[in-house]
Image (tube, rainbow, N blue to C red):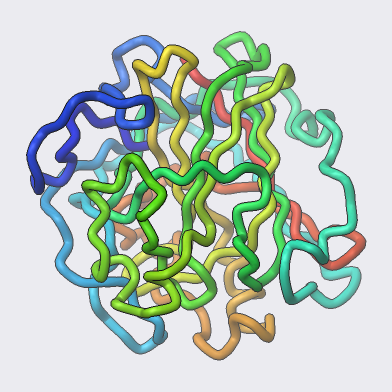
Length: 326
């Protein structure tokens, strides 16, 4: 997860005063920001790679054939510490019905109960570092449904925060942002108080529709169970990046922030990007996670960044993950 210390994270733009969402970033050894980890698994501890570097120069593409670089910034991640890793990410079961296609109004099931996070067993610290924020972030004060009416594979995105003893962590602000089915980020920053590092056309490819919307961005505060439950749609991919979404977690004081990215198994991404009517026209992602060539996720030991997924009875998607804060 991205941990940063200034307001010009990629070397562009002047410094400015610290704000509620533009907080001190810090490296893994510093208290709260030291780690976000998978919890509710029997995996052994394994460090992931921190990343930093110069800015990319190309906008995300809306076509599968585009080979331009994505709107993120980092050098190749370092190899993780060699430890035995037991993967606890559940493969998506065979479809019980066709995948739903449309808006989040198609989600007819309730959010899962807390015990869905307990399927993996014991709690174990597995991550101790972060992934870059990228230049497509800006804050949007939107709650549970962050789709802004966009369509795709409707998804319940349920995240749980726990401390080092696996106790729920409440009152932390969780921000989410990701691309649409075309691989484009939304770009209407008019209502944001934190848009000075957003790179406009670099993220939207100058698409008028993307420039005039705030889709797939929002924030919620973790409840007494440490949970936030978003309603969104499965993201699209763009060239040279594993299909992913961004997440940032801020403590109640607004002084510390952890930034990261999460993803899905290659098998599941392929199933959706080649078989779902709203994704198949672009085809499969050009940078599978297992290929080890994504510039942000580590080449090995990436399991802790991967969400568990399953199909809901209504054909929508449930994706969930537990992260440890120390």
